[in-house]
Length: 336
Ligand code: KG4
Ligand code: ZN
Image: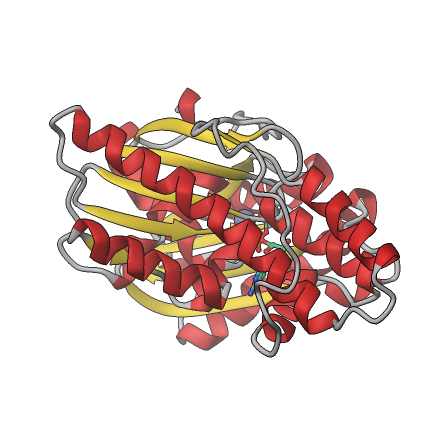
């Protein structure tokens, strides 16, 4: 079955074609980073308007790259939520329109479920339950995946998302947008112990918080005139990743204490492209002698391949969605 998927929940307009949820035929990601850079973050209306200009070309590029035509597509998938309403509307309406025009089914996909299930494309024989750390610009959460479509959110941020903290700290330092990859690179040349930044919510295993950490960086920059930016980046990064790893460890222990042995630890979302997080998750998996499901970096940031993978699973579990189904900007995976 050939699935054509469209992702447009934030500032990326992406389309992909995946056969049987496993064989990647094409993937196109058109980023609007340059458009939003000067505002230091994504402007929803601008994103929506630009997506509208791009959507048909991006879909055509995905078809061209795969050597297919629309008539070869058996199922159309589009992101229904969560995300920015103006942006979601464009991709999901386009996917529904293609489905209607071609007389094929449509499935509306949850963006977070797609990030979590993206590990299924690259890893064979994934078993349940596993623990997934989902960290992006919009969300940070630890989820127990009991099975396909069965999610328990064990911990989440009470304020900023991890990626949002990266972006805000990058702005404080005067780096560009998005801040995550820039801080990640600079951190490699810095000393993670140079600044003793707080590990927020240390005694609250189900809560994360990153806004206080951002303030701590702000004061460190104000109070230490000669601070090396590389050291600030490395120390900030150490604090964020320490916090994420400790919440993930808690979820693994919780699952193990339920006598449901954790089979693996997975990561997903843009921050999962972070080099320090990737190596710390590997270490965590060694600590528990479980698998580490770490997607390729291009699968961590927003893409449509993960929408196709989750779309087929959704289709097999719940069947198609009617074309009358709308977007859901606040859609929670616990409501699936
Ligand atoms: O999943 P994603 O592409 O979009 C959302 O759904 O939010 O995540 C984007 C976020 C941005 O905040 C970006 O700064 C962060 O992921 N990010 C990173 C890295 N690459 C992207 N954060 C830390 N280290 C990275 N290497
Ligand atoms: Zn995302």
